[in-house]
Length: 529
Image (cartoon, rainbow, N blue to C red; front, side, top):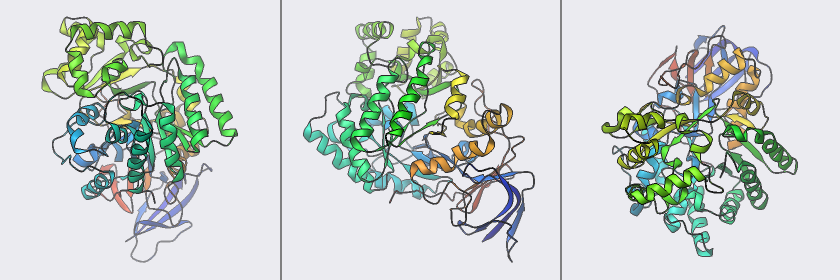
């Protein structure tokens, strides 16, 4: 099948200023770009007044379970995302040994949701990726081997330090998953069991990743009080292993820490000048979103989610939790300290009994339950078996713009796909950059915004044939109206598709046409070779 897209303004993903021209698609590939005439038997789409860009690439996404349950993943395809990188934060679907299916599903629930609609006995990344392919996704899907899953298979969910034999076992598991096509390793050093890892453990794993020219994608140990020391740790890992370091959702949390952004960026720039490969992604909001269980001190998570629930049932343990939250623990990112009980909001709960908590701050939750906010929150986590999502407000708009313009940055959504009232980034991260920041605020030029959604993330991931509007590349395209494109979701009403994304093509087929989904699911599961 041949398709000629004519009279568009092409922003090709390179960062160079856009130009008028046509794009010829033949099958799954871009055949020609520029002054191209319509060949015989070609379907012609006139996109006068619209911008033609490569399909957007989301380097931090949580569609891992959602893509199996609803392969269309409408929230992503409707904002122009054609490729997603799964396996984030060290906590994902595979590998998953049979003996850990029960506790791991509970641990995963706050990030990726819950479902009994799939067969959870797949075991390895190879089989999980095959399941994704069989589901026929609308977007292209790539995967990172999650550190927490690897550690769990090798040494369980306990907090103990990895010994020499544990490290060998973890490397063997990781090598198997990289061989299956994972693009690298992810970790989330605030999530269990990843947080139990010492720096040397990460160096050993990253050395295996570097040997395959993969990337190390990391939610660092601190994004708040200890962010500078945390950043130094990541640079130490990169220096010693030789791995490409990619920092997830770059930010500095809490007013008292806002002055640490520039020193942190200076550390990264100095390391890059030394030859370390560094990048980071960012979602364009001043609030984040994750599982509510992160408000609990690290010791509460030792042994996995079943142990968390058990400890939440103990009044003595609850008293200790409150004391640790109010006094702090050195090296621990204390969300209640940097955001506040009144700036953390419940976004989802798995059971019907607690749906009235959704949308409430932890202070409001306490008022609703007639208890202090701490115990009301502990009740919620215990009753929901830790499957609760949250939004937390931590940042400042000036930082969003500063990070967005940094040459190491690319755009991501970090969209948690659970029910309830998710963070609006799930539906609008990429259109928000195009509309609010590139057009309305003029915080960066359109061609740079497009590059940070396409060509730049393709370079980070090592994708050789995506991210540019270029002959020979995969026919992944997003066509939008630069004058009207904008996100619509709010924190109060987040489930709204954006405006201005008119056409989205994945591997030569229209997934969105004239602003409506076509039902085509032409995505591919991408495996790193």
